[in-house]
Length: 348
Image (tube, rainbow, N blue to C red):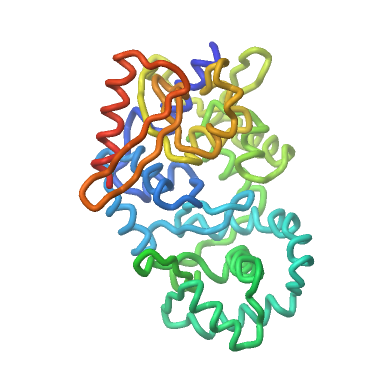
């Protein structure tokens, strides 16, 4: 097995070219969590894994709360299911808060300020109210809590990590926050070992083949956590060694059915790239010096290999797509990319 086989397996297991889902919440449930700070592109990441993708179906799921958007891994924005948000946050929040401690101190946001802010959130959001950042800042300022610089972002993130608030429906183009207890059902509390085991199994099933360090990069947890989760799930995971590196994935993968083809216009921060610490399997050796372009911009993938960047501009009547290949494209590659571009335009 080669690095190209790894790339093919990852695209296959991430459901980019087989058994696509009907609903956005099915995508998120399978993937565990999907990076989502670039919202318009993040919706397309869900759409890529759907049988009949449509922007409005993802937006509808956000409005209804069947998928939520919050800080849960590393930390950055992720889509997650309401039934998963509590156990995931219980698992990841302690490490995120520890990592944020210096920022809390620098911005002089003390526990007393956090608690006072949380009381404001509870009072102003109860009854299903969904507030924009501007409305939240106004409520905090009226309670003599400063929200300048990064303080509002810090307070909101901390409230998310404490399982007090989560995403509400959008108001126009504005995001809102609402009380988690009024947005997501209460779920049974599970111990840390079970939470680690769940997250490990979800990751390696949907993202495998992947390494321990890939999981650590994606989750923000430790190597010890990864090893413990694999040990608990050892009957459901298998390992393969490629060029001396140990990869893990679900045992039920039928290697004879894995597709070697597939052309996608990946959004920025798509899980097929961002979810791995080492992305060499998906990037030809001649393009591995383009780390920034691959990490921070939408990418063109042909036969599960990165071949360039792309961008889009949305007008009133049409969507224009600009292709920025890293090298010359063959006719077959160009034709495949045109088909992928048509699918993106149809999504919007």
